[in-house]
Length: 403
Image 1 (cartoon, rainbow, N blue to C red):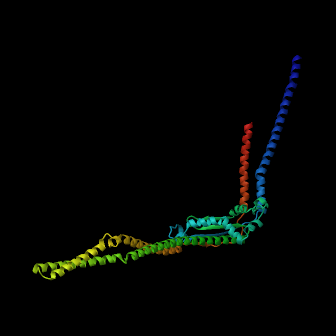
Image 2: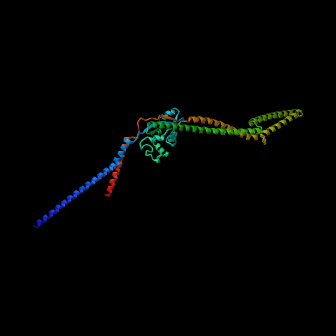
Image 3: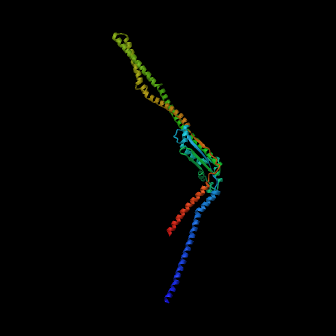
């Protein structure tokens, strides 16, 4: 009896334990399901926030709001008559015509087109600012939110530089100009105006280079002429003061006279010796002696004029005269060289002129090139997915670290 009673008491205990285990298991399953639902809701919320919302905004903006933008394109070449090394088919073509492209000046034109100076020149004749401020959607036009902070010229210039693109092909030297506005005709108008301003810039460079080159050559010529005039006046003053017309000719004349007197003296002395030898008492001897003495005195006088120590001698005058004559000759040569340099400078200034040659005239597009709507929507979706994946990885890493 007692054993049966114990067995009957144990059976309810086992049953109670089984029921408790079943209840705990059910509660755990319910907890897991609730947590799973919460995580799923959290994932859905994260997905729609990071991926769905940006993609929807992109779809609405690029599909319904974004304004069409038109790009006018032209191409040009800055060339020069100078002989330069050219590469590429186009460069070889121009070189065969005696024309070479000018790479450095091409970059100067490129910088000018995107400069504040070019924008200011354009604004004098074209309402460039109104083109970008009156048309376009609120996000793409200039100061679409109409904020007073963005009404200054610097803000518009920063906006404007994003609409003007100039690319240079380093091989052919051809530059491409692209102007982006919200109207095809306005894009073409700005493109044409920029090409005109660039051509004016090239002309100004030509004029400045020509003026500098010729002015320098003329200045050298003027200096040489003044120097030649001074040396000529100094030489003339010396001639007038010393009674010298041409020292070289006078010296040659003096030497010729000395030679003639020497020959005559020798002849007289020979004749005198002969007379003395034949008739020592001949009365002609005194006359010949007087003639001999006269010739010696004249020779001495002429020798003194040529090689004497006084300032009137040719020897004394020769150093100063030759110095003045040499200075005058060099000055005249400098004048001749300066004249030749001036003519060369004028020819070189004309030969080295720069030209802006328009290869392709500005186009007027008949369809918008921007915005690339489908591409931007897909790009937004892909980037959002990438961001979502990174966030998911970070979240999972943080959760694992906590556990």
